[in-house]
Image 1 (cartoon, rainbow, N blue to C red):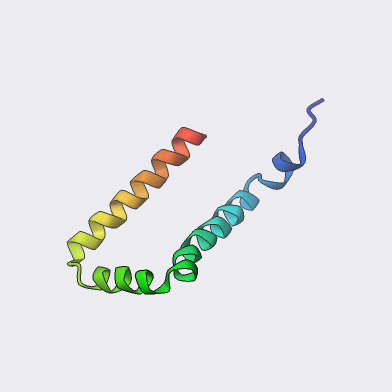
Image 2: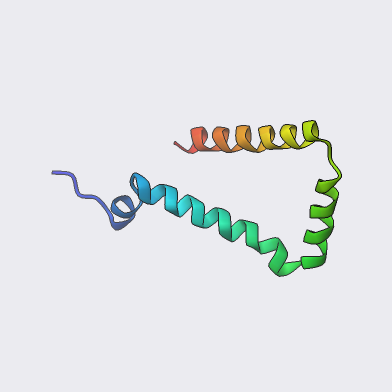
Length: 73
């Protein structure tokens, strides 16, 4: 008989996706909450990037997230 902890029961399958989305929203909201002027400056600088630069940044983010997920899993 396998006894599962509360954490294992509540973070399986789809619940894990919702938990990950919640953490993304928390992390995305930290900079505008703490330093709105800096957030605005960073955002306006990103608007000036070319499409290729934004795609490369997106690729790095996706690859980093996938690597981290793989390492933790």
